[in-house]
Image (cartoon, rainbow, N blue to C red; front, side, top):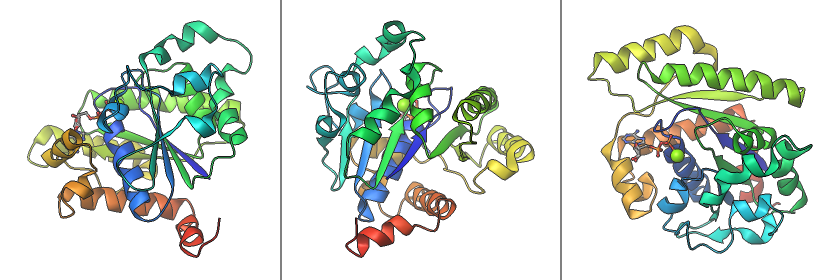
Length: 265
Ligand code: ADP
Ligand code: MG
């Protein structure tokens, strides 16, 4: 089981969009995928048409050990795609656990002890550094950092890289990651400039392509479907497919896909 985390210390950069669409594409390729919504704002939960105020079992209950990870997720309207929902209570976890010993590895422990029958777990993070993001990064095998191609968003990336350094130190191993330029608008100079600055500073850690602005991402989210389900010919669909291919390549040539396709575990 691979755990991919989608994080950046900035909101509105496409984290939830990337989590949902990469998860849905993996699911469409025959993988069993669990999405975990760790954002107290619960955008991913709402995207999949669950009401964060009414859903019975959430990630919050798992953190408080009131529920088991293995029995707390829900089937979504998308085949092979499951959701561990968020609730606003997640925002209280920093206060609840503080700097308690082991507070940063609760998710990792819950995932490894739950005996989950998933090929992939994708974790959508809140835009703030706190106990939720620390838990996600501690559990991660791989990190995707969506960065909006806009000057102000580049600052969020610097903060995120600093966090990553800290986490890698405490994990005693570097966490592999990929910077993903998002919301790229080739018609604007500002977007092209920001992409250029990203390339200059982070070329080695950056996906060579980008996720362009495509209004169909928003249309798909309103309907609770992936962009591929909304329009398989959308430019956003092609971008997401190609991002997934790149990440699978980085993670070892997509071996897990072959495993399940051959009827293995
Ligand atoms: P985050 O999770 O980082 O806060 P979201 O994924 O929720 O960001 O995206 C913020 C808003 O921008 C949403 O309304 C989403 O539909 C829209 N959006 C995200 N990516 C794109 C894109 N490539 N093109 C157009 N709209 C997008
Ligand atoms: Mg989000």
